[in-house]
Image (spheres, rainbow, N blue to C red):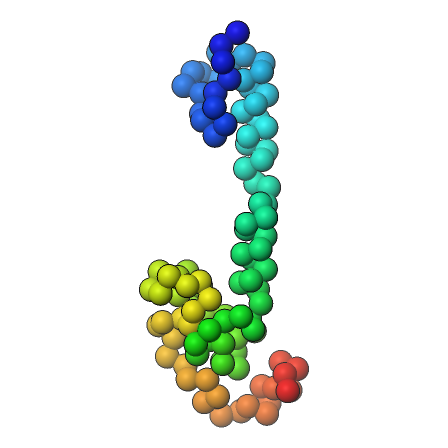
Length: 107
């Protein structure tokens, strides 16, 4: 029996030529692909916590409903929680702060 392909490798043969063991391992790898890993679970938890945002995004009254572009923040600064560099909004400049606080349930 030929050796199984290394984990993460795609066999270089047609699927009909795979042995049962190789096909089973390949299907296991495909099934594992969509499962969340602790790294991503922790990262997503950090991204959902708007209190961890930095810069203007952290001070913004819309941070719980907007959050800015985390991918652009990471691309421009190397920090996924940094402020959104292309956002033109200045925190606390929205003219209806009391109405906003009432609707967002913020103090």
